[in-house]
Amino acid sequence: MEQRLQKILADAGIGSRRGCEKLILEGRVSVNRRAVTRPGAKADPERDVVAVDGERVRPARKVYLMLNKPPGFICTSRDEKGRRTVHDLLKGVRERLYTVGRLDADAEGLLLLTNDGDFAQRVAHPRGTIGKTYQVEIKGALDAKGRRGIERGIVLDGRRTLPADILREEAFEGGERVVVRIREGRNRQVKRIFLAVGRPVRRLRRIAIGGLSLGGLSPGAWRRMDRGDIDRLFAGAGKGAPPAGRRGAGGVTDESCRRGTRDGGRRGGVGGGRGRG
Image (cartoon, rainbow, N blue to C red; front, side, top):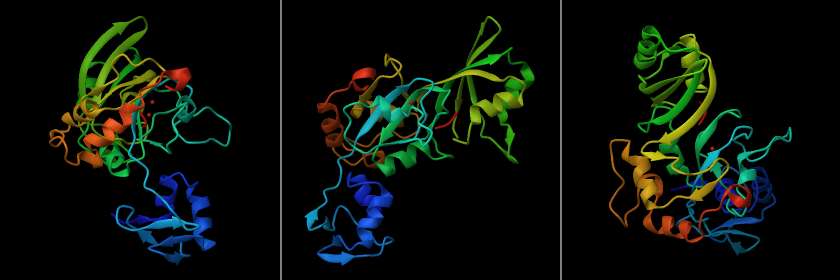
């Protein structure tokens, strides 16, 4: 599939997209031995020979990580204000990765990171079929009217949200813990739907995406996903992963998973997530 040259170069770890645009403008990039000086030019990384200063650029291998994001970290590669980012937790990870969706700085829980754009788009699409499950601590308790509103959909920005599933409610001192599953990815959607029914969120933790749950992953810890994780992730979308050996949802293959798990997972401080809730 054709992509912009600066994206191909950035995904291969050559530099930032802006830096790669500069390389193109300087005439240092070629496609099939022809110099390219237009940043908007495209190429197919699987078929075309892309080179920088005469050295061929190899497509980066696909990497899939799951992280238990603690609060206080933001979902960006770098921050001009000097705040901690989720990439600070990925010690030992050399690949250039980006988050699949986001979580607010004060939210916590399951976050996926990858360099596979097709995979990320399918998982994080705002009106996709993969549910995201959250454990939400609210002030007070949901009443019947609030519960019906969330389950039927709340109007946000002039458009009603898709129906949500309230899976469990549990009282605790001063409030209630609610487990809710949504199928959209609007900005701060979980916080906003609870606020709309008069129940501000105290704590937000994502515990599952599709059929993939945090399991025993400690806060700040991460690990590489294997084929079983990919299968569980997409099992909740109504379609299972494709047969072994074939290209899967979002371009995932058995081989890419095996290459990823060969390096082994790492724990938080040694090298160990958010779509926004």
